Amino acid sequence: MCQAEMTPIGLTFKHEGFDKYGKVRQGELMIVHRCMECGKVNINRIAGDDSEETILLLLQQKNITNELGSILKQSDIDLLGKKDEDRVRKQLFGTHQVG
Image (tube, rainbow, N blue to C red; front, side, top):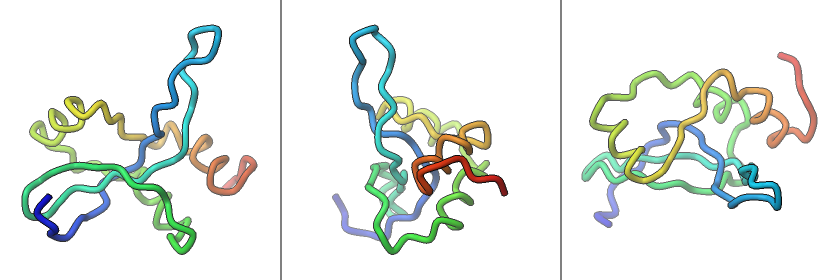
């Protein structure tokens, strides 16, 4: 890794395998980062001092180029969107939050 600055580009859920019925288990909420220098993408846990409001803003990200989309697909990373807001809020706050 080149050790350059990483910028957050979105959110995803960590892959946790399947339950006994074959349904995908929803894992921990993770932040997707991209290296500003080499373009490498990785996921990191949310830290205790990360702002919940800033995390929720990552659901609004729309700047996904074809190149980035290919990198995410190769890395098996599915970015979350506005449709996932209820699940994200549940992980952040523990219950469904309106607002």
